[in-house]
Structure formats: structure tokens, C-alpha cells
Figure: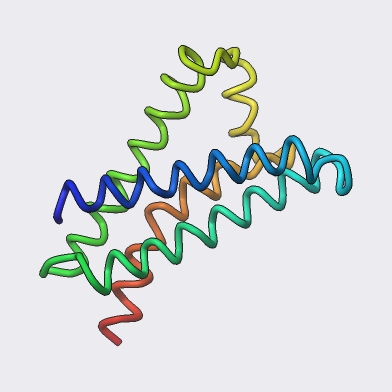
Length: 131
């Protein structure tokens, strides 16, 4: 895995996710409600992750491809967790209970799907490429 390139992909996806969150909270929630906005933000960023993973795997991931894809996915996953909890709490000032609430999939919170897509997307794209 090219660590710098994989991290750069994650960083760009985070910038897109922040802009997406701002758009969803400040604009779309007025028209489609809070949960509709949550659904939009979740599925939009999952699509961004799959596109980013496709570009990474097809152009930047070294052989062995599956190992590179898994390494990149795990890097993105752990970077997201770190960003979510450290930056979310200490920089953005979100309380811990609000941060943890996004992991309650049984209450319709879908953040776990975003994290899962960070691991699955590179692997799926590697598999599609090798088929």
C-alpha cells in the first residue's frame, strides 16, 4: 500500500464528507427533515467512498492488490474513527453521547455503514478489477 496516497484519498473524502454534512444540516434538512438529511448524507458519502476506492485501486494500489486494498480500507476506517472521536469531540466540541449515538443502527443511525464501506469498497473494487 502506498501510505501517503491512501491517506491523501481519505483526507479528500473527509473534506467532501464535511461539506456534505454542512449541506445536509444547513440546507437539505429544511426540505427533507432531519432523518431524510441523515439518509442523504450517509448514502452520498458511501458513493464517494466507492468512487474514491475505485480510483485508488485502479490507479495507485500496488500488487498484491487485495492486500493493498485491505490495508487502504483499514487505514481509512481507523483514520475515520480517530477523526470522529478526537476531532469531533476536542475540536468541534460534540459531546461523547452525540458521537456514540451515530453508532446506534437499531435506531436508524447509519454511520456504521459508512465505516463498513471504507473497508468493503477497496476490496470490492479490487475484486471487480481482478474478475
